Image (cartoon, rainbow, N blue to C red; front, side):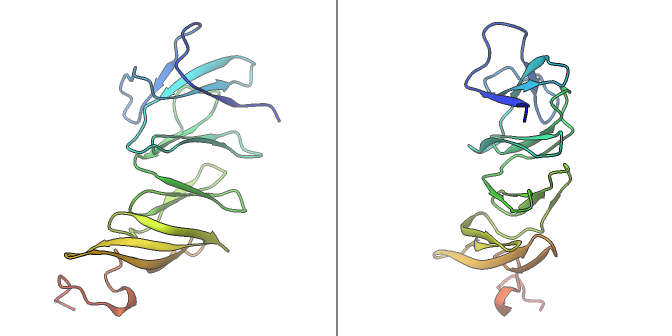
Amino acid sequence: MIAKFEILNALPTTGPMYIPVADNDEEYYSQGYTIKFFRDNGSEWVANFKPGLTDLNCVYSFDGYHGILVIAGGTCYYMNPNDFKPIAIFGGGYEIVLNSSDGRLIILDSVGITVFEPTGNFWHSVRISFDGFKELEYSDKVVTGLSYFPMFDAEKWDRFSYNIDTKVLTGGSWNMTSNNKKYWWKFWK
């Protein structure tokens, strides 16, 4: 398989100017997440991706598909290596990526899940957590773990499971009725 990209440690000091890629089309000239793309015609270009809000930096290519998913500081940029402009931009605070056996990526920020298909399609779950996850596992198309719930006197973590095929959420701290709990602000039920 021919390489479509190379992760660079720094902005290039010689050669053609890098292309800034940002989520709002702004001119971005600080050091970001730097990727060299190889075009189908044999030429190459360097993209400097504006990072999001986290430390998550990674690149994914998909067998049989031309697109590349770049995650720069938690912001996702879906790219065609032949084009300077992203096909799609989403997120900003992604922290974790889980790989499924069918090639999909399960990408989590602090409140929910995004499922990214090798075709470039993606969708977002309902909100699952108030602000954070831990003890995450993925098996048989189900993401499980603990979701954070801010208590007045202590931290609390509620168990959840989310099926990425059926999009069914069970539990979770944002799901106010998980485990038949009644919270003080749900006085009308």
